[in-house]
Each structure stands twice: as C-alpha cells, then as structure tokens.
Length: 390
Image (cartoon, rainbow, N blue to C red; front, side, top):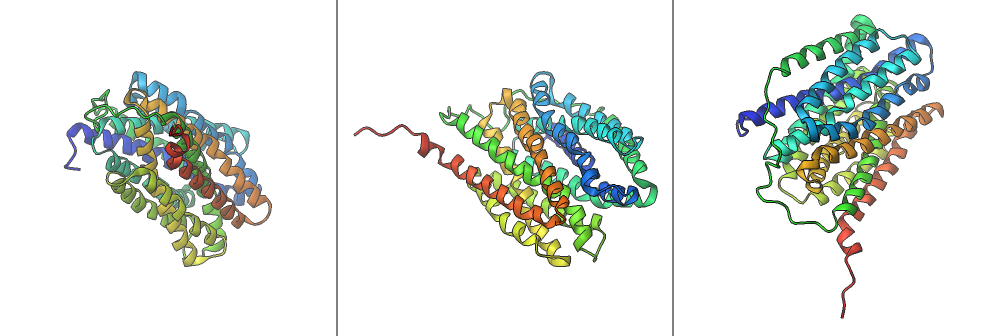
C-alpha cells in the first residue's frame, strides 16, 4: 500500500478490520446452524429461522449509523460496531438455543450493521483512489466471508458452538482496543474529486433504481450465504462443508480485486450490468451439480456476485454528495441487508420443501430482476428526457 498516504493506510486498516469482522460475525451462524440442528434434533429450517431478525437488523441499523457517521465521524461508528459485535458474540456463546439465542443474534446483527455505511463513507471521502480502495476493502470483507465457514467448523470441532462464539467475541474486543489507539484524520470533502461534479438532473431516479438493484442483490447475497454450507454438506464429500464454502468464497476475493481495479477505469454502469448478467448461468447450474463441478461453479458465481460490490459502492459514491455520503450508504445497506434478509426465507422455503437446490433457480430470477433494474438505470436519461420540439 505504498501508493497511499499514512492517513489513507490507517483508514484502510480500520475499515478493512471492521469489514472482516462484520462479515465473519454475521456468517458464523449458517455454518454453526448445521451442527446445532444435528446436535439438538431441531429441524434445520427452524434453526435457520432464529437468525432472521438478526439479519434484518443487520440492514435496518445501517441508516441511523450512516446518519451518525455524517455528524460525529465514521471512525467512532466503526469502533462502536467492532466493540458491540464482540460483546454480542460472547453473549451468543452463553445463550440457550431458541429465543435467547435469537435475541443474541439480533444484538449481533444490530452491532455489525453499524459498520458498512461508516466504513464505506470513510473510504470514499478519505482515499483518493476510490475504486481500488473499495476493492481492497471488499477483499478484507470477503476474507471474512471465506474464512468464516472453515474457521467456525474447526472451532466447533475443537470446543463446541458456544466456545466458538466466545473465542470470536474475545478476539474482536482485543482488536478493537488496538485499533482505538490509531488516530485518523477524517476529511469532510471528497478526496477523489478536485472540483464539484456538475449537477445531475437524473440523480434522484438513478439513486432510487440503484437502491432497488442493491436490494435484489442483497436478497441474492443473503440466500446464498445461508444456503451454501447446508447445500455443500449434502452434495460435496471431497472436503468438509465448511472448507467447501470457504473454497467457493475465495473466488470472491479475486472478484473484489478485479472489480475494484475496473471501477477506476471503465464506465461503472456497464460494469455493474455485466457482473449481474454473468452471475446468472452459474446459479442455474449449481442446482444440478455436485462435488468438484459444484465447487467450481459456485466459485464462478461468487466471483461475479461479490466482484460487482466495489462497482456498486462506487456508483453510490457518485450519486451522493460528500456531506451526505454516510446517509447515502446507510440507505443502501438498509435495503441490501435489511430487505435482503428475505433471502433467509427463500432458503427456509426450499429446505421445508425437501429440496434445498430450489434456492438457486429462485435466486437466479432475483438476479435477473436486478439486471433489468440496471438496464433501467442506464436508460434513465433517454426515458426521462423532455421531448424535443421541432
């Protein structure tokens, strides 16, 4: 990171740690749920349902977090998110299965929800090479996504699900204490733009369509992160289901890097459309495959599905003024993770029907709707331009 200033590096370290922790903590449960259901004899659909409120709050909390980030500073909100997530994870470890565990997961989701609007706002305002920085931050988050299944499965095997949460929460609190000692200068303007961007007469309709596309992408994201561990447990015997999920999501780290690099070089709207379209064929194939072909296809889907995120975040930065950047990202993550929690219900419906593979064609329809929304986003000037007078 030699091309960044010392302050930019501190921003990237804090934001990267927050992103890693937010996703690691939120995605422990889908892997843990497979073991918990087997140990207790409770149906997996019911066990997964205990996480629904937590995933809903993971999105709903983003809007007030973004509003506060614009007023008291993003660094404070990121550190609050880290500390709260650590405490909630420890509480989950001491909870009994059922309503008590669901309440702890809700607290964890609310604490983790504070990160995304604050972290994205901090990067977009404080680092000049925005697309690349968002890509690096995406890699940190995706490392959390990729490592969670295998690490969680290993911790469960060593000490059980309770100690897995306690160990995770304790580590997060130690990291929070260390990061709190590193000062950061938060710019109030946008470091990427030397001059104010010209007014965009289509900003509001474009922003609304972008939020709709992000919501649909959020449903896809949540459904896949919840379904894949259980699906790999059914269809992959080459490695454990935790390792299989990790292998699939490692491709997302490459996708995040590629997406971040492309976001600084090419028109964002066309990149955004291309990544959505490219993720549909592997989704349709996943329902019919197993073993290595399933892992390769799942990795291909994750490459495009997560590779679009730096592009999407760059688009939100373009459409929001710096002084409202946190609030803009808050609105994005409310729909991405809040409404996106509906993805859990897709998985529950597929599991209840006795065929978990149904999840993936349903998600392909959701992604196709997202691609259609992006087409409308691109066509806004043509659709809303006043008619020419002869």
